[in-house]
Length: 140
Image (cartoon, one colour):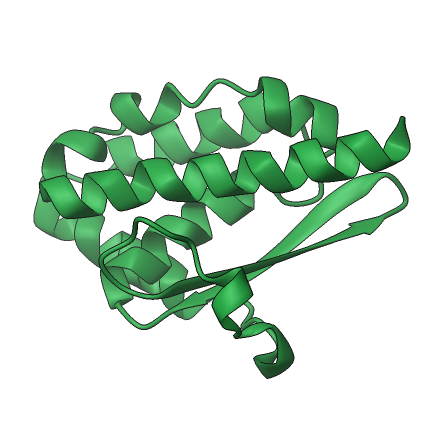
């Protein structure tokens, strides 16, 4: 499935909810379903800088596709990273680098986050794309 198709699925899912309380609950549930990062990767070098809470992300390349695992010590943040991993995991680095993230605005996520969480969201996207750049460089 393409990144755009996954983003459209997420937009559809969020549009089913009447209010932001329900959407937050959905994000929390997504975070609970996030496959946990292996404890060996919960290191300072895997922490995303710029997040209010701790978010660890690990990337591995398999058959030309990047797979991400993550965890966070905050439930909303864990839900946010779960959404991003759903979009970007198991995609090739080039597609991740070139991916548009307008879906975040379409679901209204950024406007419903505190300024520090919104900055964290931007940092998460930036870090996932940086992993893609690093792996793309290895492919060339």
